[in-house]
Amino acid sequence: MPPFEKHILVCTNERPAGHPRPCCLSKNSEAILQAFKEALQQAGLKGKVRANRSGCLDACEKGPAVVVYPEGIWYRVTTVEQAKRIVKEHIVGGKVVSEWQSFK
Ligand code: FES
Figure 1 (cartoon, rainbow, N blue to C red):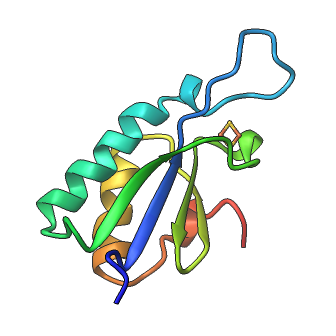
Figure 2 (cartoon, rainbow, N blue to C red):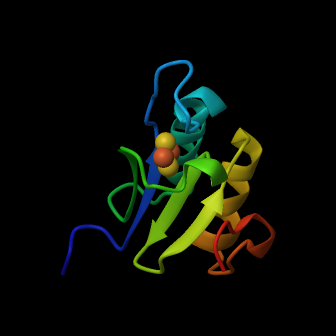
């Protein structure tokens, strides 16, 4: 059995100012990653679901980019509150938060 049931990848890629593509780090993704980690711990999911820092996921224009595997559900998560709700409704409750999906 694999060590984790799910992974939440949060892009924290940074690009220099003036780059033609946006980057997720400039859109608060570090705080969003920490919010996912805290929400998972509070939900008692440590060791079952892991939130990981990721490099560019090539969804820069739809960032901060977050993807949940194994489902392959992509989100645009712009606030800490959104991260907490995704853990509560999707990860714990099993219901995708469709209003924040970046690809359907
Ligand atoms: S910089 Fe985050 S998806 Fe590309």
